Length: 305
Image (cartoon, rainbow, N blue to C red; front, top):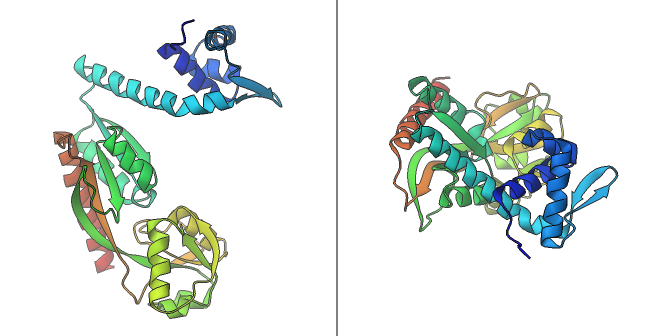
């Protein structure tokens, strides 16, 4: 029995998992529903496995598909890179810039650097992903992204880091809160109030909790969230206060909160990383120049304000 799957079969499995139905997979693949059904039946027969179960009208992947899906996703991304390269070689495009950014930098700073870069390189295709630090570093090491834009990245044996800027943590406080009128707040001021932590096992949250511990103060955690923008949304709704990175709130889009500087300095180091076995491309270096310019302008304007 031939158990080897073709690329088209892996694409079909990926589409069904993503869409949750035969009809949805057919739309993603731009083929007919009967064609997807036949391919699925043929694949299950070929493997001798039941790959999907119908639950309340939707196809649920079985355990076997879950174990395959991570590798199928890698195949999809690899084919995307191959097709990008083929387009460039055929003269259909000037190139591709692949970026990965942590969400706090992707909120304000990185989009402005991308806009600046694409004004000079209008034919370049951008592929950008926002992810937490561990999957982001994996994407850079595996070639899914040429550059990773990170904060608080420690030395890594297979990454070269380009330090870019040092920022700080700030307090996000509901607009109607008594502390919102302060020009500056200390950890002692914030300690008695319900606190939204940005990841108890993630860099920002660990820095904040460590700062409270070193000050000998309790942190009254009322919520634990993975991203600073989610913490700000909760502050905006009046759930509590939060200590967040200043990058996320540089253009405060939440009308119900104010940003107040901290009396204590909690520094945050921005850097760009790329794999040591893949030299930084000319496009990557030019993007870094644009990001440095954006950082300089953004923090110069902020200091003047």
